[in-house]
Length: 180
Ligand code: HEC
Image (cartoon, rainbow, N blue to C red; front, side, top):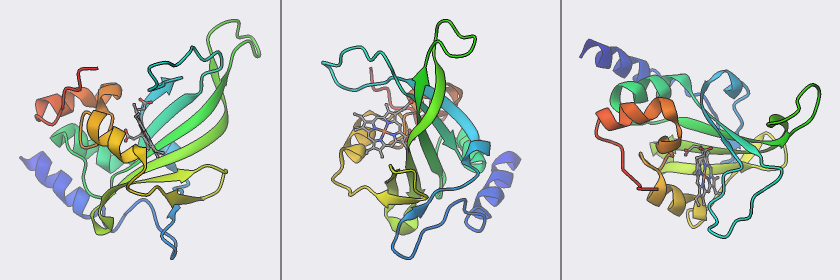
């Protein structure tokens, strides 16, 4: 109970220490320090297309979340308001330097962000596709929302693919078994 109280205090101060800002036009500014946040997973060459053929050059998708939201999730199995998750896509290579097999990460390809902000209608997606610092909002009709809503194990996020979060969600009864 005390831990939850401490976390509640931590999270209410989060509004002040919000880890992102918007421009006047409503674009999201890319948080500069997201690489220091908590790392959740690296999907490699993931695809959602039934007829997909194997990709010889699959990209990595590294997922990060702001540290306070991570701590809160571990305790409660839920995401607090102002949670911000970053998906950083990087190209991959084999056979460079001493590497003879397997793949390593190389250039940044794209960044996509998922933000839970009750002041702006809840979860929203932003894309940073041209290396810019300003992310454009995806409209609510984009397939990002429907796929995440239907298939994300917890609160429209893909907790089923984030190994350190699965147990916390199950323990707190917030894990939706998507069966695939
Ligand atoms: C067909 C399903 C599907 C669609 C459509 C989709 N995603 Fe995702 N998304 C995923 C999966 C699966 C993951 C987990 C990735 C991993 O484990 O590497 C994910 C993870 C993410 C994450 C990391 C945080 C989280 O919510 O788990 C972000 C950010 C993200 N997607 C953004 C987007 C954006 C922006 C779009 C629309 C342009 C989009 N996604 C469309 C399936 C989808």
